[in-house]
Figure 1 (cartoon, rainbow, N blue to C red):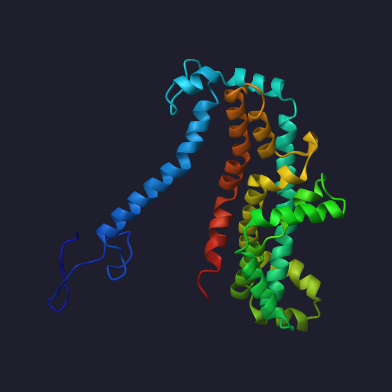
Figure 2 (spheres, rainbow, N blue to C red):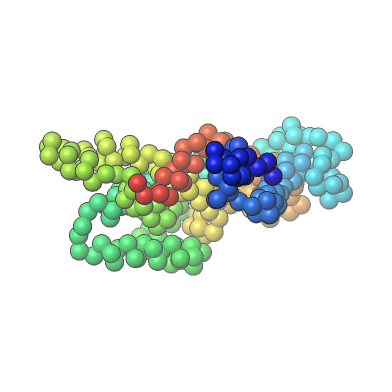
Amino acid sequence: MSALKPTVDGLEYRPSIEGQPPRSIAPSAMARTITTILLVVALIYFLFPVLWVIFASTKNNHDIVSTFGFWFGEKVDWSGNWALLTGWQPMFLRWVGNSIFYSTAAATIGTLLSVSAGYAMAKFRYPGRSVMLGTIMAGLLMPVAILTIPMVLLFSQIGLNNTIWAVIIPCMVSPFGVFLGNVYATTSVPTELLEAARIDGAGEARIFFTMVIRLLAPAMVTIFLFIFVGTWNNFMLPLMMLSSPELKPVTVGLYGMMSYYEPQKGAVMMGALIGVLPLIVLFIFLQRYWQSGLAAGAVKG
């Protein structure tokens, strides 16, 4: 606790701690302690499974069940497990490439669709706008697993089952992305700027692609990451849509490898580790963009 200091009137006051918010709004010591404990628990919850996979990827079947989970086995054998993985399942690298392609395509198209729809609902007035916004908000509450079976039947009828579009099209539609695009467009795109561009003779398409997209760039990075991660982690949809091994993403491929007779678990764990690395690299590379995007719509100017 900081020491008391006198004012020019002879009164005493307790100054704020340097590097922290003013005392009137600064959290108490108890609140900081509880927050620290909760963050440590969250860190353990999210970090330990990754650590377990890293250690498991160095082991063979015997070491996985006979050694401590959060340490190396009797022999660190990354190269052996890698050779076993690629030799045992030659399609593994193709599955990783499929996941990268599905996630990148769905996230790129889905981000453009989301910010376009969000911008239109935020800056244009037309009949049914409130109904559309309410419908999209309701879509946020719909469980994806329940919608998977109707989508499988629909795509089967139109002949798109077992194609790349059976994964890309459902994943690029994101009610959450439209909601974020609407919030960011409302708070970050000045109406006066749009009116000035229209007076200068710019069309709506030119305004959107040359001005609005630049203003919504932080939000677009956030939406891109949400759709990319959602597509990468999607399991049930590609499991039911795809039957060709050449089209499987890495999640479905690893699931299939575990169902083999006497699976090489160390090799599968190495495959799981490689399947997580692209997401970690993407989050680290885009960290400063998506953090600013999350806060961009928090305060109205």
